[in-house]
Amino acid sequence: MEEPVSAQVVGLENGRRRTVTFSQQVANILLNGVRYESDLSENVETVESQMSMKLLCIAIYKMPPSLRSLCTNHFLGWLSFEGMLLFYTDFMGEVVYEGDPKAPHDSEAYQRYNAGVSMGCWGMCIYAFSAAFYSAILEKLEERFSLRTLYFFAYLAFGLGTGLTTLSTNIYVVLSLCVTYGVLFSSLCTLPYSLLCEYYQSPQFCGSSEEGTRRGMGVDISLLSCQYFLAQILVSVAMGPLTSLVGGAQGVMYFSSLMSFVGCLYSSLCVVYQLPPAEGRDVETGV
Image 1 (cartoon, rainbow, N blue to C red):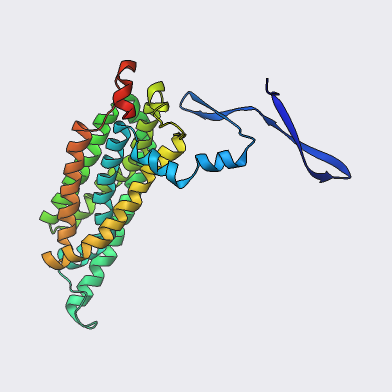
Image 2 (tube, helix red, strand yellow):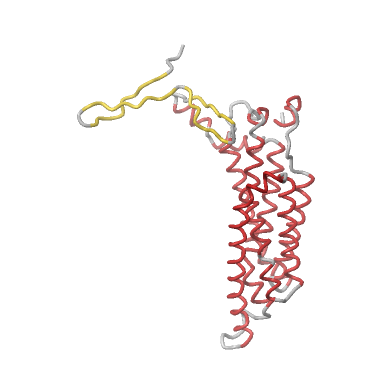
């Protein structure tokens, strides 16, 4: 039998040996009522092989279908949000205020563009306040409404907000619609991770790993977070040609509204909110 506790001398302190003990069984990761245990390996090479890039890629490729759907939905949300966020002030200056950033600096068109950009900054301030407020009440809303409903509402509100913004040139209407941007931002930062915690309530999801790999919540959280950066890359590559094709920043708002409505449908039809019973384990593990 293995010794339950091992000790290792790590240095000298005040002329005496200082030792650090390691528990053979580590159970220090508690999240949402689920307890995760992992063994400490004495072989460093074994640990390194488990964390190798090859096995990480296998874990990504063989991710459970429910997690893949959640990542896709998360990507759609960030794709719609990032387009709006990066081009909102340009939209205000070019479309709402009918300015021209390429006009001479002493021209009226350029002054209107600057005024629109300044007003767009106030719109971003409204969005930030709405995100803070919605984040504060979101936990209470999760107690009264399902995650499916909150997801649907967030995407729908953002899609309507960005869509109606392109149809109105009234500055007060445009600014008031910034409230919907905060709703989606708070939801994207909260709901996917809440749903992932729900997944980890299921033993079959926790055990959905290929042989020789270790799938854990850290890997799955990182996969969700990667969707934010993937969306940024795509927006950076595609939005320039899109604005050139449309002739202004309104094309980005159209794109954001469309992607939000796609995410609205995807979150309702494709995202798994309740895992199948234990006998469906083969389906969930992808084996």
